[in-house]
Length: 294
Ligand SMILES: NC(=O)c1ccc[n+]([C@@H]2O[C@H](COP(=O)([O-])OP(=O)(O)OC[C@H]3O[C@@H](n4cnc5c(N)ncnc54)[C@H](OP(=O)(O)O)[C@@H]3O)[C@@H](O)[C@H]2O)c1
Image 1 (cartoon, rainbow, N blue to C red):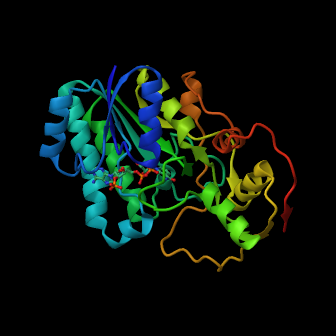
Image 2: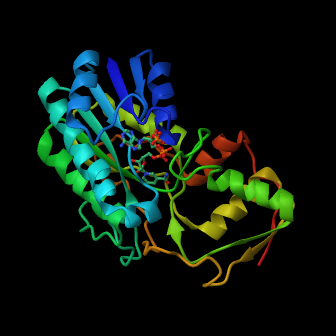
Image 3: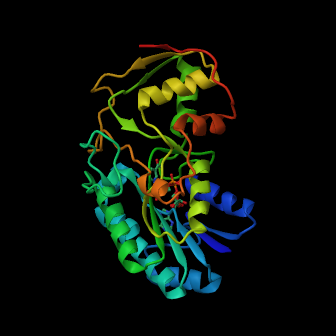
């Protein structure tokens, strides 16, 4: 198959490109330098030349604070950009796999969100991504909208800069010996490598629609940190951060765990537990020591 990956040099896009290449698909990586998705003519031009059968859109403006500061740009990229890609995919007869987010939910539910739950974003980022989802869902039949959460991967997340949560925890432990992490926000950490493999599975399916795609299970950020240190046998004192220690500038869901209900119903779920994904990322097959944790 001929695949084009938008955001191909990003954290997720890098692994998506590799996952398709491993299946011997012909895959083209498109970076922001190659293509501005908010520009319909540029999208039309790029895909007109490539003629892909499958387009994977990982490109987004997803720095939550920056979206709040510049809502017009957030909507131009996350909503109208998605509309542009959907319109061109429709005209080419291509399948579109569009990546979205757990931040379309407000976090009040307290149990894992399913695809049938009503979204209620708390911030511009979540709102603009939800608008993008609707443009894709209305723009062409042959689509997968894939909501995910808590990504980490070998390639750096370009929007956030620097290290992902796993690498940051390991660096802080090494530099300081004590690490403080909140235990009041719940997510499902999902490795981009695993999600990329799930995207390849979807590209072979015609069960189009809206899907949640995260690793299995959930944890607080504090539990995630504890598992990182346990798996890597890192000596560290892990403490619970106080409620006002890392004040959020923008409202975010406190609980954004997703259930892969639709993937399971279709027999398409390829994601393992978040602990297994973490072990694969860290290149460790067995857990060792316990971490001193309060
Ligand atoms: N990271 C997470 O924890 C997380 C959680 C849930 C959902 N998601 C979603 O997952 C997707 C991938 O995230 P990621 O972590 O891989 O992010 P990333 O590393 O920041 O990658 C995003 C890519 O999109 C490109 N891009 C940004 N604006 C663009 C534009 N206007 N036109 C064309 N390309 C543009 C970026 O290029 P430049 O950097 O050069 O601008 C980058 O290559 C996004 O859709 C995001 O909303 C992420």
